[in-house]
Amino acid sequence: MDSNIVVLKFGGSSVADNLKLNVVAKKIIDFYKKNLKVVVVVSAQGKTTDCLIKEAKELANLPNDREMDVLLSTGEQVSMSKLAILLNRLGYEAVSLTGMQAGIKTNDLNQNAKIENIYTTRIEEELEKGKIVIVAGFQGYNEKGDITTLGRGGSDTTAVALAAVLNAKHCYIFSDVDGVYTTDPNKITTAKKLETLSYEEMLEIANEGAKVLHNRCIEIGEKYNVPIVTKSTFNNKQGTILQNEEQSANEVKNEIKTYNKQDKIEDARVKSIVKNDDIIYINMKYDTYSPEMFYKIYATLVKNQIGANHLQNNSTHHTDISFTCPASALNKFQNLLEKDFKSFDTTYTNISRIAIIGHGIRNDDTILEKVLNIIELNQLEIYHLEVNESKIAMLFTTKVSNTILEQLHKELVED
Image 1: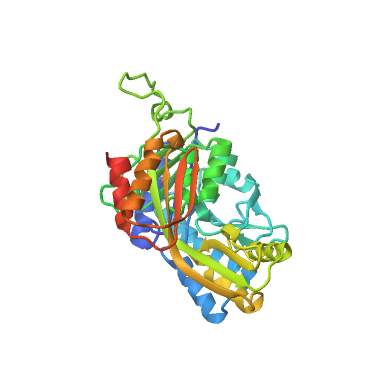
Image 2: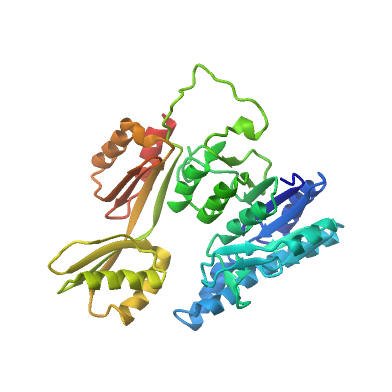
């Protein structure tokens, strides 16, 4: 491992305006002054991506995916060039690189491309010259030389992938929050910051819709054992460290962890509770049924990247298919209704999903008992219940209030 390289990623809220860019520049300079080779990954400024999507949809209800990648990639390019201009003015040589210039090769899937390889020659050459390298996150290029994007939150994936191929000492993910919390601190004021999390636990949190880290960046981090630290751009508080199960926070800090008689050797503990309200429950009905029809519907959903989950057929006599999808995919699904599913009687409603996450919680029946007691007391109906080694997840038939989240947090975390 080249202990002289660090990768720093700054999110959209961190680079939102020129004032904040100055704060980011100071953070970068602090690392550079420690004789480190610094690679920076940036997101688009503020709500730029949302604005670009809105403007595109004013031109076409369902814009062409290739052209959307071309359009959306411009946001990160504005951020990287502005930051490079600022650093150079402050006396620190910096160079900005697009995804293509940085050698980030992806597959051909527009809007949600996967990184296949990163050719780091250009980055390494610039680092050897003593420059700070600023890379546009969220983007790459495919075999045809076309611009591709990695999906929302993809700048995290860019940063961790770069840290992996460059054998970086650390990958720091800077945002407007100073770590990962036991639940959303904007919803529950008693939420506590977590000092450490395993990759597995963090992946569960991300997959459940918590907007902390892109789930794909965690998978890369675990695969290549990249030390990931989430911190705030706007303070110097300790962040949250992502690590392997067998590691401890003290080992990450090169200290020795000794056994404490007060510790439980096997301890099932809830680490985080995530409530996701951006889920749509869809039901499709038709007079007749055949297995071929079921497969065709599912294939159409997959082909159009609807992100269908919990798909099931509720009858063998007629078609009665239900599934869930992200609220962000509703527009695409509505277009399918007009094009491919005109003859179906279709309804959809907004629902909630709550996930209780912590390694080993399946082995402690009292956790599930407490969860179900709270659900019963509030007379809530569960559509789907999932229990595995590190997660209890409930999908409800309606959208539930944050009061439920507060009750679960108080019973499972605060106690």
